[in-house]
Image (cartoon, rainbow, N blue to C red; front, side, top):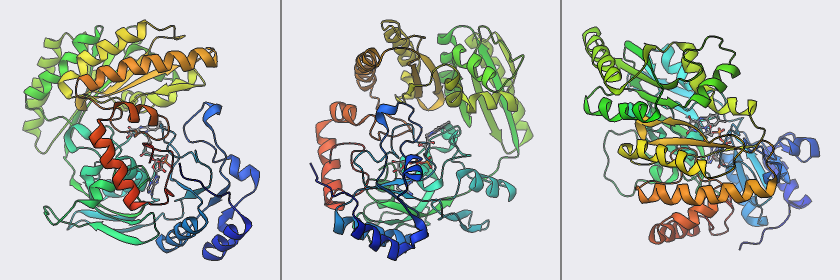
Length: 468
Ligand SMILES: Cc1cc2nc3c(=O)[nH]c(=O)nc-3n(C[C@H](O)[C@H](O)[C@H](O)COP(=O)(O)OP(=O)(O)OC[C@H]3O[C@@H](n4cnc5c(N)ncnc54)[C@H](O)[C@@H]3O)c2cc1C
């Protein structure tokens, strides 16, 4: 176990000298604002000892060096939308805010790339690309609130991953501050490269444990001019889930295939106050987006898709307008209508196992006395399911016990299918114990060696992902 020092007046004085007194906060009200991210269970909150707001990579490097000198841990925070307790300073120390690194440095439509500082909101990059007729294909549901550097740090997924892949597939390279306070650039704006280790890919998904990402170079895609969004409504989850394999085999190459069980259909319709949501009482939604470059291709694929939905047993096939997408985007927020404390899981399995996994998860859920049945929404086109448990008025003891037993069963099943704990939200502090339990020993040992070599003082985001 690493022993850290408390934040001292000497440390703060040096940080103030490096980044300006006005960017260092210690007053209790301010600190209290950063005790949690999207975690609502107060037992998991942790008030940091100080909050710092650097303005560029050089200032971040100076802070990191001081943290090594004084043995003070750093937790980086961007939008604070982590669902894995990733932005909570679980070992104390400082919270480092990325909000001042908020400039889009260059958008190059000839070379089809964007260079941006890490604290730019994801939605601003999406909008800028769209306005120029291009697509930035990273699209987490939290795009309005999260920041691009954190999307890289968590390797965020989202609604376009079926066709375009996840955040790591949208990135050429990045600049980062290493755990020892050096500024380095990794990756390059190349279509192919076999020149040593692929460092940028190692940093992506490392959740702030291997470096603080300060600048990113992102790929742009040509924007397909034709698009349709279909809502296929089912009453039987197994029929709904059978659609994925049919679409994949037909070569439709959709942008998204999203799933909402009926509890989500009701909760999100209520949350966004969508009166008259189709099949509110019993419907299970599968939303499919297809984008093409010609009208003929669009027509052909629409016909194909409509046949496949019918074949799979859809009770209705409609156009998925903006309100249906708003329902999908508000799945996570809608939980607050049901329970103050909840837990969102992020298990990922091979795409051909998604139907059997959802079936098994529902079956496991029925064994436990959770106040309301397990809720499921999923990026079914990429094998990633969000299983939501709601605490409601359950006692703390029962909640801990049943959640743990439920997880043991679900994770063991997922790993037996070739799955993993997290498809896009990361491990954070929340799933660290399960990461230790379920990760193959050889793989975990390699991760520990890398972390120790890069961050000998365990300064960056300790208490996250695995025990360093
Ligand atoms: C309503 C809602 C919907 C969501 N939908 C999706 C979704 O569709 N897909 C998805 O993948 N996730 C989703 N998430 C989870 C979350 O939005 C993502 O994990 C996102 O990438 C986090 O971004 P953030 O800016 O909020 O980062 P934070 O929460 O501030 O940080 C997340 C983690 O990254 C680290 N970090 C932050 N910035 C940096 C940096 N510059 N360098 C190094 N490490 C850093 C932090 O220390 C922390 O461990 C959702 C969350 C919510 C609340």
